[in-house]
Length: 82
Image (tube, rainbow, N blue to C red):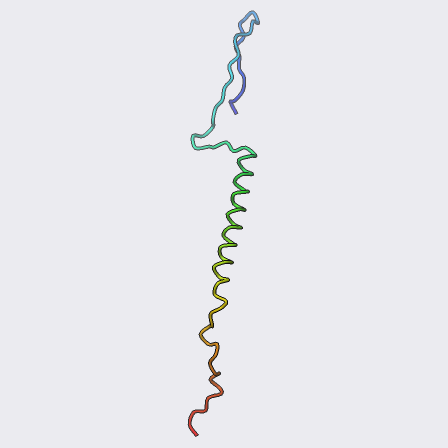
């Protein structure tokens, strides 16, 4: 990792001005710190809860409707021919 603080020294031992180097090893890299990661996790949890509540509310509205087979006599109770 080439990042750091560099300085030059002369032959007499006198140190020159310091230079701080920030270098990114790859062009597509993104530095992510702890608050950013925790923000992403919290947003993911909130979105998941919101989606679960939305699915629950949408499916909960169908309770009053009858299903296709409800209210019909079973097929075994019919007598075909005598």
